[in-house]
Image (cartoon, rainbow over the protein chains, first blue to last red):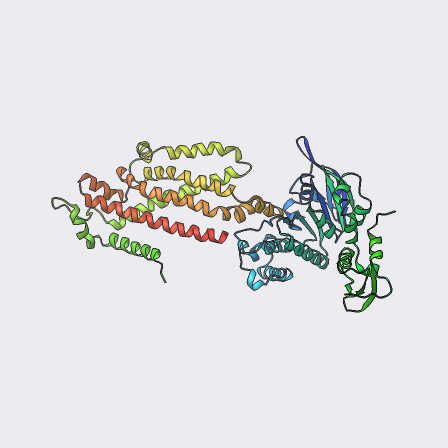
Length: 312
Length: 244
Protein backbone atom coordinates (compact mmCIF):
# COMPACT_ATOMS: atom_id res chain seq x y z
CA UNK A 1 0.00 0.00 0.00
CA UNK A 2 1.21 3.46 -0.86
CA UNK A 3 0.22 6.41 1.21
CA UNK A 4 0.88 9.90 -0.03
CA UNK A 5 0.62 12.53 2.67
CA UNK A 6 0.40 16.24 1.90
CA UNK A 7 2.94 15.93 -0.87
CA UNK A 8 4.05 19.15 -2.59
CA UNK A 9 6.71 20.14 -5.08
CA UNK A 10 7.78 23.70 -5.71
CA UNK A 11 10.34 25.01 -8.20
CA UNK A 12 11.16 28.54 -7.12
CA UNK A 13 7.81 30.32 -7.44
CA UNK A 14 5.93 27.69 -9.41
CA UNK A 15 4.06 25.01 -7.60
CA UNK A 16 3.92 21.78 -9.58
CA UNK A 17 2.25 19.48 -7.09
CA UNK A 18 0.11 21.12 -4.43
CA UNK A 19 -0.61 19.31 -1.18
CA UNK A 20 -1.70 15.95 -2.59
CA UNK A 21 -2.85 13.21 -0.23
CA UNK A 22 -4.04 9.84 -1.45
CA UNK A 23 -3.82 6.14 -0.74
CA UNK A 24 -3.23 3.40 -3.29
CA UNK A 25 -4.37 -0.09 -2.36
CA UNK A 26 -2.14 -3.13 -2.61
CA UNK A 27 -2.60 -5.04 -5.86
CA UNK A 28 -4.68 -2.35 -7.56
CA UNK A 29 -4.13 -0.17 -10.60
CA UNK A 30 -4.30 3.56 -9.88
CA UNK A 31 -4.35 5.84 -12.88
CA UNK A 32 -3.33 9.47 -12.50
CA UNK A 33 -4.91 11.44 -15.30
CA UNK A 34 -4.82 15.10 -16.26
CA UNK A 35 -3.72 17.55 -18.92
CA UNK A 36 -0.05 18.06 -19.61
CA UNK A 37 1.58 20.24 -17.00
CA UNK A 38 -0.96 19.22 -14.37
CA UNK A 39 1.80 17.73 -12.23
CA UNK A 40 0.92 14.07 -12.68
CA UNK A 41 4.39 12.95 -13.79
CA UNK A 42 5.99 14.89 -10.98
CA UNK A 43 3.66 13.22 -8.50
CA UNK A 44 4.63 9.81 -9.88
CA UNK A 45 8.34 10.61 -9.83
CA UNK A 46 8.16 11.66 -6.21
CA UNK A 47 7.14 8.11 -5.31
CA UNK A 48 10.53 6.70 -6.36
CA UNK A 49 12.29 9.95 -5.48
CA UNK A 50 13.37 10.85 -9.00
CA UNK A 51 11.95 14.17 -7.85
CA UNK A 52 12.55 15.12 -4.24
CA UNK A 53 9.37 16.41 -2.58
CA UNK A 54 9.44 19.96 -1.21
CA UNK A 55 7.17 18.86 1.61
CA UNK A 56 5.02 15.94 2.65
CA UNK A 57 5.91 12.28 2.58
CA UNK A 58 5.36 9.00 0.81
CA UNK A 59 4.90 5.80 2.77
CA UNK A 60 5.25 2.43 1.07
CA UNK A 61 3.85 -0.33 3.29
CA UNK A 62 4.15 2.06 6.17
CA UNK A 63 7.81 2.88 5.54
CA UNK A 64 8.82 6.45 4.76
CA UNK A 65 10.64 6.45 1.39
CA UNK A 66 13.07 9.03 2.72
CA UNK A 67 14.31 6.45 5.22
CA UNK A 68 15.69 4.23 2.43
CA UNK A 69 18.72 5.07 0.26
CA UNK A 70 17.32 6.21 -3.08
CA UNK A 71 19.04 3.58 -5.22
CA UNK A 72 17.87 0.80 -2.95
CA UNK A 73 14.34 2.22 -3.02
CA UNK A 74 14.35 2.23 -6.83
CA UNK A 75 15.60 -1.36 -7.04
CA UNK A 76 12.34 -2.34 -5.36
CA UNK A 77 10.09 -0.24 -7.60
CA UNK A 78 9.58 -1.02 -11.29
CA UNK A 79 9.72 2.03 -13.55
CA UNK A 80 8.44 2.29 -17.12
CA UNK A 81 8.51 5.47 -19.19
CA UNK A 82 7.09 6.60 -22.49
CA UNK A 83 9.30 5.46 -25.35
CA UNK A 84 10.54 2.79 -22.90
CA UNK A 85 14.13 4.14 -22.49
CA UNK A 86 15.72 0.80 -23.34
CA UNK A 87 19.53 0.72 -23.34
CA UNK A 88 20.46 0.74 -27.03
CA UNK A 89 23.83 -0.92 -26.37
CA UNK A 90 22.39 -3.90 -24.55
CA UNK A 91 20.48 -6.86 -25.91
CA UNK A 92 16.91 -7.57 -24.88
CA UNK A 93 18.24 -10.05 -22.31
CA UNK A 94 20.80 -7.53 -21.09
CA UNK A 95 18.13 -4.87 -20.70
CA UNK A 96 15.81 -7.12 -18.75
CA UNK A 97 18.69 -8.25 -16.54
CA UNK A 98 19.53 -4.68 -15.48
CA UNK A 99 18.08 -4.61 -11.97
CA UNK A 100 18.85 -8.26 -11.11
CA UNK A 101 22.48 -7.51 -12.05
CA UNK A 102 22.50 -4.41 -9.87
CA UNK A 103 21.20 -6.59 -7.07
CA UNK A 104 23.98 -9.10 -7.68
CA UNK A 105 21.90 -12.12 -8.65
CA UNK A 106 23.75 -15.19 -9.93
CA UNK A 107 24.02 -15.46 -13.72
CA UNK A 108 21.95 -18.63 -13.82
CA UNK A 109 19.09 -17.13 -11.84
CA UNK A 110 19.15 -14.04 -14.05
CA UNK A 111 19.03 -16.18 -17.20
CA UNK A 112 16.03 -18.10 -15.90
CA UNK A 113 14.23 -14.93 -14.92
CA UNK A 114 14.85 -13.36 -18.34
CA UNK A 115 13.45 -16.41 -20.15
CA UNK A 116 10.46 -16.50 -17.84
CA UNK A 117 9.66 -12.83 -18.50
CA UNK A 118 10.13 -13.09 -22.25
CA UNK A 119 7.66 -15.96 -22.27
CA UNK A 120 5.24 -14.02 -20.11
CA UNK A 121 5.32 -11.23 -22.68
CA UNK A 122 4.97 -13.62 -25.62
CA UNK A 123 8.46 -13.04 -26.93
CA UNK A 124 10.27 -16.24 -27.87
CA UNK A 125 13.54 -16.23 -25.83
CA UNK A 126 15.45 -18.05 -28.57
CA UNK A 127 14.55 -15.35 -31.05
CA UNK A 128 14.50 -12.20 -28.95
CA UNK A 129 17.01 -12.58 -26.10
CA UNK A 130 19.98 -11.68 -28.31
CA UNK A 131 18.36 -8.87 -30.27
CA UNK A 132 19.15 -5.21 -29.79
CA UNK A 133 16.33 -2.73 -29.10
CA UNK A 134 16.58 -1.10 -32.53
CA UNK A 135 15.77 -4.47 -34.11
CA UNK A 136 12.38 -4.59 -32.37
CA UNK A 137 9.03 -3.06 -33.30
CA UNK A 138 7.53 -0.34 -31.11
CA UNK A 139 5.16 -2.79 -29.44
CA UNK A 140 7.96 -5.27 -28.74
CA UNK A 141 10.16 -2.54 -27.29
CA UNK A 142 7.33 -1.52 -25.02
CA UNK A 143 6.90 -5.09 -23.78
CA UNK A 144 10.62 -5.41 -23.12
CA UNK A 145 10.43 -2.13 -21.19
CA UNK A 146 7.72 -3.54 -18.92
CA UNK A 147 9.52 -6.88 -18.61
CA UNK A 148 12.66 -5.03 -17.55
CA UNK A 149 10.72 -3.14 -14.90
CA UNK A 150 9.29 -6.39 -13.52
CA UNK A 151 12.57 -8.31 -13.55
CA UNK A 152 13.34 -8.17 -9.84
CA UNK A 153 9.71 -8.89 -8.89
CA UNK A 154 8.87 -5.44 -7.55
CA UNK A 155 5.65 -5.18 -5.56
CA UNK A 156 5.11 -1.73 -7.08
CA UNK A 157 5.26 -0.65 -10.70
CA UNK A 158 5.32 3.01 -11.75
CA UNK A 159 4.41 3.76 -15.36
CA UNK A 160 4.73 7.20 -16.93
CA UNK A 161 2.61 7.31 -20.11
CA UNK A 162 3.84 3.81 -20.98
CA UNK A 163 1.66 3.46 -24.07
CA UNK A 164 1.95 7.03 -25.34
CA UNK A 165 4.25 6.18 -28.25
CA UNK A 166 2.19 3.27 -29.57
CA UNK A 167 -0.37 3.32 -32.37
CA UNK A 168 -4.00 2.71 -31.32
CA UNK A 169 -4.16 -0.98 -32.26
CA UNK A 170 -0.94 -1.93 -30.47
CA UNK A 171 -1.85 0.32 -27.56
CA UNK A 172 -5.10 -1.50 -26.99
CA UNK A 173 -3.27 -4.84 -27.04
CA UNK A 174 -0.61 -3.52 -24.65
CA UNK A 175 -3.33 -2.36 -22.25
CA UNK A 176 -4.95 -5.80 -22.30
CA UNK A 177 -1.57 -7.43 -21.67
CA UNK A 178 -0.87 -5.12 -18.77
CA UNK A 179 -4.25 -5.91 -17.19
CA UNK A 180 -3.70 -9.65 -17.62
CA UNK A 181 -0.19 -9.56 -16.20
CA UNK A 182 -1.16 -7.28 -13.34
CA UNK A 183 -4.02 -9.59 -12.36
CA UNK A 184 -1.69 -12.53 -12.50
CA UNK A 185 1.21 -11.06 -10.53
CA UNK A 186 -0.84 -8.90 -8.18
CA UNK A 187 1.56 -5.99 -8.67
CA UNK A 188 0.44 -2.59 -7.43
CA UNK A 189 0.51 -0.28 -10.44
CA UNK A 190 0.49 3.51 -10.55
CA UNK A 191 0.10 4.74 -14.12
CA UNK A 192 0.15 8.26 -15.50
CA UNK A 193 -1.73 9.14 -18.68
CA UNK A 194 -3.52 12.04 -20.33
CA UNK A 195 -5.87 9.66 -22.11
CA UNK A 196 -9.20 9.46 -20.29
CA UNK A 197 -10.18 6.35 -22.25
CA UNK A 198 -7.05 4.59 -21.00
CA UNK A 199 -7.77 5.70 -17.44
CA UNK A 200 -11.28 4.23 -17.52
CA UNK A 201 -10.05 1.05 -19.09
CA UNK A 202 -7.18 0.34 -16.71
CA UNK A 203 -7.88 2.14 -13.47
CA UNK A 204 -9.36 0.46 -10.41
CA UNK A 205 -9.14 3.97 -9.06
CA UNK A 206 -8.63 7.15 -11.02
CA UNK A 207 -6.96 10.29 -9.70
CA UNK A 208 -7.69 13.44 -11.68
CA UNK A 209 -5.13 16.23 -11.43
CA UNK A 210 -5.53 19.80 -12.59
CA UNK A 211 -3.17 22.72 -12.03
CA UNK A 212 -1.03 20.86 -9.49
CA UNK A 213 -3.98 19.78 -7.36
CA UNK A 214 -5.75 16.45 -6.98
CA UNK A 215 -9.31 17.40 -7.89
CA UNK A 216 -10.98 14.00 -7.62
CA UNK A 217 -9.97 10.50 -6.63
CA UNK A 218 -12.36 7.59 -6.98
CA UNK A 219 -13.48 4.63 -9.03
CA UNK A 220 -14.47 5.07 -12.66
CA UNK A 221 -18.16 4.78 -11.75
CA UNK A 222 -17.81 7.46 -9.06
CA UNK A 223 -16.12 9.80 -11.51
CA UNK A 224 -18.86 9.27 -14.05
CA UNK A 225 -21.86 9.49 -11.79
CA UNK A 226 -20.60 12.13 -9.38
CA UNK A 227 -17.90 14.11 -11.18
CA UNK A 228 -16.37 16.97 -9.27
CA UNK A 229 -17.66 20.22 -10.68
CA UNK A 230 -15.88 21.91 -13.52
CA UNK A 231 -12.70 20.24 -14.67
CA UNK A 232 -13.62 16.61 -14.07
CA UNK A 233 -17.01 17.09 -15.69
CA UNK A 234 -15.34 18.47 -18.78
CA UNK A 235 -12.70 15.73 -18.76
CA UNK A 236 -15.25 12.95 -18.42
CA UNK A 237 -17.19 14.46 -21.31
CA UNK A 238 -20.97 14.80 -21.12
CA UNK A 239 -21.53 13.26 -24.55
CA UNK A 240 -19.42 10.20 -23.77
CA UNK A 241 -20.52 9.79 -20.18
CA UNK A 242 -23.38 7.28 -20.55
CA UNK A 243 -21.36 5.12 -22.90
CA UNK A 244 -18.36 5.10 -20.59
CA UNK A 245 -20.65 4.11 -17.77
CA UNK A 246 -22.00 1.27 -19.88
CA UNK A 247 -18.52 0.03 -20.62
CA UNK A 248 -17.90 -0.47 -16.88
CA UNK A 249 -20.56 -3.18 -16.57
CA UNK A 250 -20.43 -6.67 -18.06
CA UNK A 251 -23.33 -8.37 -19.77
CA UNK A 252 -23.25 -11.18 -17.21
CA UNK A 253 -24.35 -8.73 -14.52
CA UNK A 254 -27.54 -7.62 -16.32
CA UNK A 255 -28.81 -10.92 -17.70
CA UNK A 256 -32.59 -11.26 -17.54
CA UNK A 257 -34.43 -14.56 -17.54
CA UNK A 258 -35.97 -15.57 -20.85
CA UNK A 259 -34.79 -16.11 -24.39
CA UNK A 260 -34.36 -14.08 -27.53
CA UNK A 261 -33.58 -14.69 -31.17
CA UNK A 262 -30.38 -13.74 -32.94
CA UNK A 263 -26.64 -14.24 -32.61
CA UNK A 264 -25.90 -14.78 -28.90
CA UNK A 265 -23.64 -12.41 -26.92
CA UNK A 266 -20.71 -13.51 -24.78
CA UNK A 267 -21.36 -12.82 -21.10
CA UNK A 268 -17.91 -11.30 -20.58
CA UNK A 269 -18.28 -8.36 -23.01
CA UNK A 270 -19.29 -4.96 -21.65
CA UNK A 271 -22.65 -3.26 -22.10
CA UNK A 272 -21.34 -0.69 -24.53
CA UNK A 273 -20.26 -3.40 -26.90
CA UNK A 274 -23.53 -5.29 -26.39
CA UNK A 275 -25.51 -2.15 -27.18
CA UNK A 276 -23.45 -1.55 -30.29
CA UNK A 277 -24.18 -5.09 -31.44
CA UNK A 278 -27.93 -4.69 -30.86
CA UNK A 279 -28.08 -1.40 -32.72
CA UNK A 280 -26.15 -2.93 -35.58
CA UNK A 281 -28.28 -6.06 -35.98
CA UNK A 282 -31.50 -4.15 -35.24
CA UNK A 283 -32.80 -6.23 -32.32
CA UNK A 284 -34.22 -5.18 -28.93
CA UNK A 285 -32.89 -8.26 -27.14
CA UNK A 286 -30.22 -10.91 -27.66
CA UNK A 287 -29.48 -14.24 -25.97
CA UNK A 288 -26.45 -14.49 -23.68
CA UNK A 289 -24.00 -17.40 -23.48
CA UNK A 290 -21.26 -17.93 -20.93
CA UNK A 291 -17.74 -18.90 -21.98
CA UNK A 292 -18.58 -22.62 -21.92
CA UNK A 293 -21.48 -22.02 -24.31
CA UNK A 294 -24.29 -22.52 -21.81
CA UNK A 295 -27.36 -20.28 -22.21
CA UNK A 296 -27.64 -17.76 -19.37
CA UNK A 297 -30.72 -15.86 -20.49
CA UNK A 298 -31.14 -12.71 -22.50
CA UNK A 299 -30.29 -9.06 -22.38
CA UNK A 300 -32.54 -6.26 -23.57
CA UNK A 301 -31.88 -2.75 -24.80
CA UNK A 302 -34.00 -1.34 -22.00
CA UNK A 303 -31.99 -3.26 -19.40
CA UNK A 304 -28.76 -1.95 -20.86
CA UNK A 305 -29.86 1.65 -21.11
CA UNK A 306 -30.87 1.68 -17.46
CA UNK A 307 -27.20 1.27 -16.59
CA UNK A 308 -26.15 4.34 -18.51
CA UNK A 309 -28.45 6.67 -16.66
CA UNK A 310 -27.29 9.34 -14.24
CA UNK A 311 -27.50 8.55 -10.57
CA UNK A 312 -30.77 9.75 -8.99
CA UNK B 1 35.15 -13.73 -50.20
CA UNK B 2 37.35 -10.71 -49.64
CA UNK B 3 35.98 -7.36 -50.72
CA UNK B 4 38.27 -5.25 -52.94
CA UNK B 5 38.64 -2.55 -50.28
CA UNK B 6 39.76 -5.08 -47.70
CA UNK B 7 42.11 -6.69 -50.19
CA UNK B 8 43.64 -3.31 -50.96
CA UNK B 9 44.34 -2.67 -47.29
CA UNK B 10 45.87 -6.08 -46.74
CA UNK B 11 48.06 -5.50 -49.79
CA UNK B 12 49.09 -2.05 -48.53
CA UNK B 13 49.96 -3.52 -45.14
CA UNK B 14 52.01 -6.33 -46.71
CA UNK B 15 53.85 -3.86 -48.92
CA UNK B 16 54.58 -1.61 -45.95
CA UNK B 17 55.94 -4.45 -43.84
CA UNK B 18 58.11 -5.69 -46.69
CA UNK B 19 59.43 -2.20 -47.34
CA UNK B 20 60.43 -1.37 -43.79
CA UNK B 21 61.99 -4.79 -43.17
CA UNK B 22 63.79 -5.15 -46.50
CA UNK B 23 63.94 -1.71 -48.14
CA UNK B 24 66.74 -2.68 -50.57
CA UNK B 25 64.32 -4.85 -52.53
CA UNK B 26 62.68 -1.59 -53.63
CA UNK B 27 65.90 0.24 -54.54
CA UNK B 28 65.04 0.11 -58.25
CA UNK B 29 61.88 2.19 -57.65
CA UNK B 30 63.71 5.01 -55.89
CA UNK B 31 66.82 5.09 -58.06
CA UNK B 32 65.28 7.50 -60.62
CA UNK B 33 64.90 10.11 -57.86
CA UNK B 34 68.56 10.17 -56.86
CA UNK B 35 71.28 12.35 -58.29
CA UNK B 36 75.07 12.05 -58.45
CA UNK B 37 75.07 8.43 -57.30
CA UNK B 38 73.50 9.20 -53.94
CA UNK B 39 72.03 6.15 -52.12
CA UNK B 40 68.47 5.32 -53.19
CA UNK B 41 67.52 3.78 -49.84
CA UNK B 42 67.97 5.47 -46.46
CA UNK B 43 71.24 4.13 -45.10
CA UNK B 44 71.76 5.92 -41.78
CA UNK B 45 69.52 3.66 -39.69
CA UNK B 46 67.03 0.86 -39.93
CA UNK B 47 63.61 1.87 -41.27
CA UNK B 48 62.04 -0.78 -39.08
CA UNK B 49 63.39 0.62 -35.84
CA UNK B 50 62.53 4.18 -36.93
CA UNK B 51 58.96 3.14 -37.71
CA UNK B 52 58.63 1.41 -34.36
CA UNK B 53 60.04 4.47 -32.56
CA UNK B 54 57.67 6.71 -34.50
CA UNK B 55 54.64 4.59 -33.58
CA UNK B 56 55.75 4.44 -29.96
CA UNK B 57 55.91 8.22 -29.78
CA UNK B 58 52.45 8.54 -31.32
CA UNK B 59 51.01 5.81 -29.13
CA UNK B 60 52.49 7.35 -25.98
CA UNK B 61 51.28 10.85 -26.79
CA UNK B 62 47.78 9.79 -27.88
CA UNK B 63 47.37 7.52 -24.84
CA UNK B 64 48.23 10.39 -22.55
CA UNK B 65 45.91 12.78 -24.44
CA UNK B 66 43.13 10.20 -24.28
CA UNK B 67 43.42 9.63 -20.55
CA UNK B 68 43.56 13.35 -19.74
CA UNK B 69 40.93 14.48 -22.28
CA UNK B 70 38.42 11.74 -21.47
CA UNK B 71 38.76 12.23 -17.71
CA UNK B 72 38.42 15.98 -18.16
CA UNK B 73 35.43 15.48 -20.46
CA UNK B 74 33.74 13.24 -17.90
CA UNK B 75 34.46 15.71 -15.12
CA UNK B 76 32.99 18.74 -16.87
CA UNK B 77 29.81 16.88 -17.84
CA UNK B 78 29.07 15.89 -14.21
CA UNK B 79 26.83 18.26 -12.25
CA UNK B 80 29.75 19.07 -9.93
CA UNK B 81 32.09 19.96 -12.80
CA UNK B 82 29.70 21.77 -15.09
CA UNK B 83 30.98 25.20 -14.10
CA UNK B 84 34.48 24.28 -15.28
CA UNK B 85 33.30 23.52 -18.81
CA UNK B 86 34.05 26.95 -20.35
CA UNK B 87 37.41 27.21 -18.57
CA UNK B 88 38.60 23.75 -19.60
CA UNK B 89 37.38 24.36 -23.15
CA UNK B 90 39.57 27.43 -23.48
CA UNK B 91 42.60 25.71 -21.94
CA UNK B 92 42.30 22.78 -24.33
CA UNK B 93 41.75 25.17 -27.23
CA UNK B 94 45.01 26.94 -26.41
CA UNK B 95 46.75 23.56 -26.69
CA UNK B 96 45.40 23.30 -30.20
CA UNK B 97 46.26 26.86 -31.25
CA UNK B 98 49.94 26.51 -30.40
CA UNK B 99 51.61 25.01 -33.46
CA UNK B 100 53.61 21.93 -32.47
CA UNK B 101 56.77 23.56 -33.83
CA UNK B 102 56.32 26.42 -31.38
CA UNK B 103 55.79 23.95 -28.54
CA UNK B 104 58.98 22.17 -29.53
CA UNK B 105 60.87 25.48 -29.47
CA UNK B 106 59.57 26.22 -25.99
CA UNK B 107 59.96 22.69 -24.68
CA UNK B 108 63.53 22.01 -25.75
CA UNK B 109 65.13 24.52 -23.35
CA UNK B 110 62.96 23.08 -20.57
CA UNK B 111 63.29 19.34 -21.07
CA UNK B 112 66.21 19.06 -23.50
CA UNK B 113 66.47 17.40 -26.90
CA UNK B 114 65.03 13.97 -27.74
CA UNK B 115 61.68 12.26 -27.36
CA UNK B 116 60.34 14.38 -24.48
CA UNK B 117 59.57 17.70 -26.28
CA UNK B 118 57.88 15.79 -29.13
CA UNK B 119 55.69 13.91 -26.68
CA UNK B 120 54.68 17.18 -25.03
CA UNK B 121 53.83 18.83 -28.36
CA UNK B 122 51.81 15.87 -29.59
CA UNK B 123 50.06 15.46 -26.26
CA UNK B 124 48.88 19.09 -26.22
CA UNK B 125 47.90 19.00 -29.85
CA UNK B 126 45.90 15.80 -29.44
CA UNK B 127 43.81 16.92 -26.46
CA UNK B 128 41.20 18.99 -28.25
CA UNK B 129 39.57 16.48 -30.61
CA UNK B 130 39.29 13.86 -27.89
CA UNK B 131 38.01 16.33 -25.30
CA UNK B 132 35.39 17.83 -27.60
CA UNK B 133 34.21 14.43 -28.77
CA UNK B 134 34.01 13.10 -25.23
CA UNK B 135 31.78 16.02 -24.30
CA UNK B 136 29.52 15.70 -27.32
CA UNK B 137 29.38 11.92 -26.93
CA UNK B 138 28.37 12.17 -23.29
CA UNK B 139 25.86 14.97 -23.79
CA UNK B 140 24.06 13.29 -26.66
CA UNK B 141 23.08 10.23 -24.62
CA UNK B 142 19.25 10.23 -24.86
CA UNK B 143 17.70 11.77 -21.72
CA UNK B 144 15.05 9.03 -21.69
CA UNK B 145 17.72 6.35 -21.40
CA UNK B 146 19.35 8.21 -18.52
CA UNK B 147 16.00 8.68 -16.83
CA UNK B 148 15.32 4.96 -17.12
CA UNK B 149 18.77 4.15 -15.74
CA UNK B 150 18.22 6.44 -12.79
CA UNK B 151 14.70 5.13 -12.24
CA UNK B 152 16.01 1.58 -12.01
CA UNK B 153 18.34 2.57 -9.22
CA UNK B 154 21.71 2.93 -10.94
CA UNK B 155 24.13 5.08 -8.99
CA UNK B 156 25.80 7.99 -10.85
CA UNK B 157 28.92 5.84 -11.18
CA UNK B 158 27.00 2.87 -12.60
CA UNK B 159 25.21 5.18 -15.01
CA UNK B 160 28.54 6.56 -16.23
CA UNK B 161 30.25 3.19 -16.66
CA UNK B 162 27.31 1.09 -17.83
CA UNK B 163 25.30 3.55 -19.88
CA UNK B 164 26.93 6.87 -20.71
CA UNK B 165 30.44 5.77 -21.66
CA UNK B 166 29.36 2.78 -23.76
CA UNK B 167 26.89 4.98 -25.64
CA UNK B 168 29.44 7.76 -26.13
CA UNK B 169 32.18 5.32 -27.18
CA UNK B 170 31.86 5.65 -30.98
CA UNK B 171 32.10 9.44 -30.76
CA UNK B 172 35.03 9.31 -28.32
CA UNK B 173 36.79 6.82 -30.58
CA UNK B 174 36.34 9.19 -33.53
CA UNK B 175 38.15 11.85 -31.49
CA UNK B 176 40.97 9.45 -30.66
CA UNK B 177 41.26 8.51 -34.33
CA UNK B 178 41.52 12.15 -35.33
CA UNK B 179 44.22 12.79 -32.72
CA UNK B 180 46.16 9.68 -33.71
CA UNK B 181 46.17 10.63 -37.40
CA UNK B 182 47.25 14.21 -36.67
CA UNK B 183 49.97 12.96 -34.32
CA UNK B 184 51.26 10.43 -36.80
CA UNK B 185 51.95 13.19 -39.33
CA UNK B 186 53.06 15.81 -36.84
CA UNK B 187 55.49 13.44 -35.12
CA UNK B 188 57.81 13.77 -38.13
CA UNK B 189 58.81 17.27 -37.04
CA UNK B 190 60.01 15.76 -33.75
CA UNK B 191 63.10 14.67 -35.64
CA UNK B 192 64.19 18.32 -35.77
CA UNK B 193 64.83 18.05 -32.03
CA UNK B 194 66.46 14.62 -32.23
CA UNK B 195 63.44 12.45 -31.49
CA UNK B 196 63.79 9.07 -33.18
CA UNK B 197 61.19 8.66 -35.89
CA UNK B 198 60.42 8.65 -39.57
CA UNK B 199 61.00 12.41 -39.72
CA UNK B 200 64.70 11.55 -39.63
CA UNK B 201 64.45 10.06 -43.12
CA UNK B 202 62.65 13.09 -44.50
CA UNK B 203 65.04 15.56 -42.88
CA UNK B 204 68.07 13.60 -44.10
CA UNK B 205 66.59 13.84 -47.58
CA UNK B 206 66.01 17.58 -47.28
CA UNK B 207 69.57 18.18 -46.04
CA UNK B 208 71.24 16.11 -48.74
CA UNK B 209 68.79 17.14 -51.44
CA UNK B 210 67.84 13.47 -51.89
CA UNK B 211 64.22 13.19 -53.12
CA UNK B 212 64.32 9.41 -52.72
CA UNK B 213 64.75 9.74 -48.94
CA UNK B 214 61.97 12.31 -48.66
CA UNK B 215 59.63 10.07 -50.60
CA UNK B 216 60.44 7.03 -48.45
CA UNK B 217 59.81 8.78 -45.16
CA UNK B 218 56.70 10.49 -46.47
CA UNK B 219 55.20 7.37 -48.01
CA UNK B 220 55.73 5.20 -44.96
CA UNK B 221 54.04 7.81 -42.76
CA UNK B 222 51.20 8.21 -45.25
CA UNK B 223 50.49 4.48 -45.54
CA UNK B 224 50.68 4.11 -41.75
CA UNK B 225 48.17 6.93 -41.38
CA UNK B 226 45.75 5.40 -43.88
CA UNK B 227 45.92 1.96 -42.26
CA UNK B 228 45.53 3.37 -38.75
CA UNK B 229 42.58 5.49 -39.88
CA UNK B 230 40.85 2.55 -41.50
CA UNK B 231 41.50 0.24 -38.57
CA UNK B 232 40.05 2.66 -36.02
CA UNK B 233 37.18 3.46 -38.34
CA UNK B 234 36.27 -0.22 -38.60
CA UNK B 235 36.32 -0.46 -34.80
CA UNK B 236 33.99 2.56 -34.53
CA UNK B 237 31.62 1.09 -37.07
CA UNK B 238 31.45 -2.22 -35.24
CA UNK B 239 30.55 -0.50 -32.00
CA UNK B 240 28.13 1.93 -33.64
CA UNK B 241 26.37 -0.86 -35.53
CA UNK B 242 25.56 -2.54 -32.24
CA UNK B 243 24.01 0.69 -30.97
CA UNK B 244 21.74 0.87 -34.01
